[in-house]
Image (tube, rainbow, N blue to C red):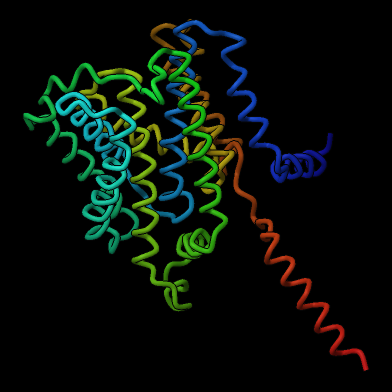
Length: 339
């Protein structure tokens, strides 16, 4: 098959509307292939990683903001839900609104003063905020200090216990599927187009009338909400959290998944997150050399796929409503030109 033919086939696959349904079907059928506790744990962790990568993709892929402290929002969601569940007896589902509010507040507090910076300066400041959140959790009594929080209850829905491996996995499938769909919809919305304009040329976007500061802050808050919700699921999976669970390595791996998959590409980011989270487990037979092999494979992929495993399309499909309006406009214009 020629390279041009392969590229055309790849574009057709990428534009297929049923691609997401195929991925969802694979996730739903996976436990029927292997349902061991280890396999379910790995697949649940992969789903959480997908949700984190999709959230960071809003900030980095859509808006072009380099964030090296994304694990801070992950930690905020996990600690807020963990404290409410263990100290005050709240069900985990009841903590969701509080976590969303906490994530929004954190996004405003952290993003407000920092989003006026650009490029390397923004990356350094976000890295600092990520470490501040971790160190603060390490020194507060309410967060358990270095010992963290233990005994986080599982998820209960209408009296049904979903804390088991299978129940938690399917809960994560539903939540992550909605998160991926929501992020994709945001990317195709008017706000998503404004994000991409800022990513390409912030000065030109501001000259065209876009309030770049507010639009960037909206991206930061959106990513914070995705990270906070992932923190709830993380606490439910492990039933215990501690400051070492939210180190800079988490932020680096999530960013790596976004870059590896293809910045700005929702299916690419999902694929990159799955590769980053599952590949080290598949390389366990290499023992002490598995991360060495993992690093070599990543370098090879980035050499031959510089824009990612599944890069975003250069020309995006116009929304159906806009296409219809354009066609109606062309028809009216043609009728006016007819003598």
